[in-house]
Image (cartoon, rainbow, N blue to C red):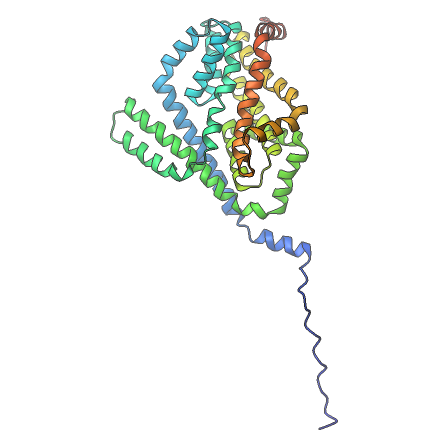
Length: 350
C-alpha cells in the first residue's frame, strides 16, 4: 500500500477571480443584445412617431388651414408682425415644413412678396421648437389613453367632420408619445454597449461629427422633430450628454431645410429664394454659435440646472438657438432679401 501511486495534489483555489479577457467579454456583451429586436423596435417606434406627426399636422392643417393661410398673408405686411405670424402659424401647424412650403406657394402665386417672407421664415424657426418642448415633458404613460380617446372621438363620424379631425389630432399626439416610448425602450440594451457609448461620446468631443451625422439622418427621415425626439430620449436614458445633444440639434435644424428646397423645385426663382433663405439662416446661425458651444451649454445648464435636466436643456437649446438666429438677423432682413435676390436672379435656372 505504501508503494501505491497517489494522484498529485490539486492546485490551491485562487483567492480572487480574474476578469475574463476583454475580447471575450465584448463578445459576451454583444451576444446578450437582441439586435433584431432593437432595430425592429427602433424602426417601429420611429414609424409610429412620424405617422403621429402626419396625423397631427394633417388635422391642424384641415382645422385651421384656410384661416391660417389668410392670416399669414394678411399679417405679414410689417416685419415684426410677420415674425410673430411665422411663430404662431408654425406652432399651430406643428411643422416648419408646412409653413415654409405654404410660403413657397404664396410667393410663387404672387400672394406675398419675397421681402415679406424673410421675417416670417425667422419666426418659423422659433415656432417649430414647440414640438421639442412638448416631447421633453416625457408624458409617454398617457400616450395610449390619448390614442384611445382620439379613436373613439373620430369613430363613426362623417368624413371631413371637424370633430373627426379633433379626434385624429388627439390620436396623432398619442402616437407621437407612444412612438417615443417605444424608441426609449429599444435603447435600453444599448446603455451598456461600449461601441454605441463611444459613438455618442465622440459627438461630445467632436461636435462637428454630431452635426454632420444629424444633417444626414434628418435628410433621410425628413423630420427634425424625430431627430430631436431621439436625442431627448437618449438624454432621458442617461447616455447622451448636453454638448452631444446640442450638436445633434444644430444638424437637425440644417437638415430640415431639404424638404422646403425639394418643394421649391419647378417653382419660380422667387419661390426658391424662400427655401434657400431658410437654409441660409440655419447654416449661418450654426457657424456663429458653433465656436461658442461651450458657453452655450453653460448657459443652458444655468437656465435649467440639475443632472436630470439634460432632456429639457436639449429642448431649450433648440428654442434659444432659433431665438438667437431671429435676434441676429431680424434687423437685417432687407439686406438678407437683397443678398438672396442677388444670388438667385430671375434669369437664373435652378
